[in-house]
Length: 350
Image (cartoon, rainbow, N blue to C red; front, side):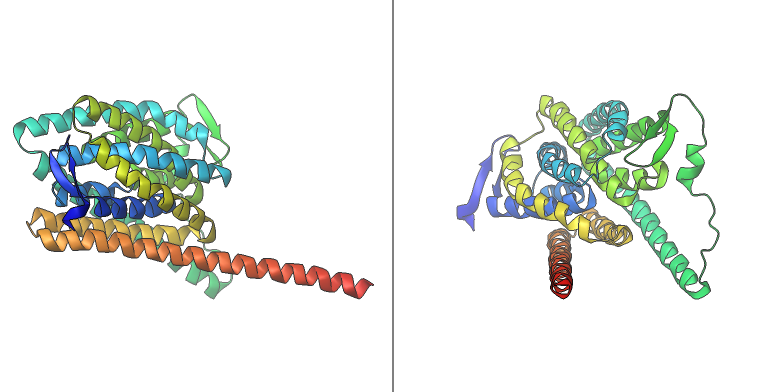
């Protein structure tokens, strides 16, 4: 396999091209499907296989910005992107990204970047995965009660509905999301996710997608598309600020983008064939897997961590592709059935 190794001049290491392509394709599929940059795979994977953490963060952000352009364009064609909502988050996101990048540079000077960032990763991933899983299980319990009783059970106002009541001008109607709230809500969400994105080397998607659903109140599919729009901006700005600091290996990012360009198309199209809560369940599973893999790395269990992160990414990508294939088959069967009904009706009228 040495024949596929290339020298990455910025990171100062040799890396396998096939591994970069595999990471890119896997992240493209998962990112297009979940509306995230996929850094839960990329940053840990690059770090696990030899990239120093600051270089893994910067290179991932560069790859992420380019990949998300493809996914965002695809989702916009399906009407899943709320441009007004995404644009309102940009100010908070860019400020947060700069604050986060400066914090990482400070940690690097203190020699704490590797350990501290991985610990933050573990905590955030566990908390977010737990809440998304709790929401899915609660939804399924409500559905079971609904089927048993035959009538909807009264529900308490969720977090997003409570936040919508905060009347701090200007109040904005985000039509694509069906949400009316203070402009300061998405700005503050953007600021928070921007800091996290920059510190952890992610597009912020693994926290922004849940935030769009649970704090702002977006439907799942619109949250996916809008988050990818934000990931595109976050990745571009993050790549710039890390590039200025000499922490972006563009050659590695380019190879990952080749794989991601194909994967993003598959993941984005698969979304239209899957119910929103099914997306949330698989999202929770991916978050927990990422959490465990980073924990193994923190415990110096290099090989198990490496195997888990790549195997999980590939398996989840295959699950998404299977859902896509099944959806296409069902859609074509329904189309054939509809066409046959039309022909039969026309024949009978004659």
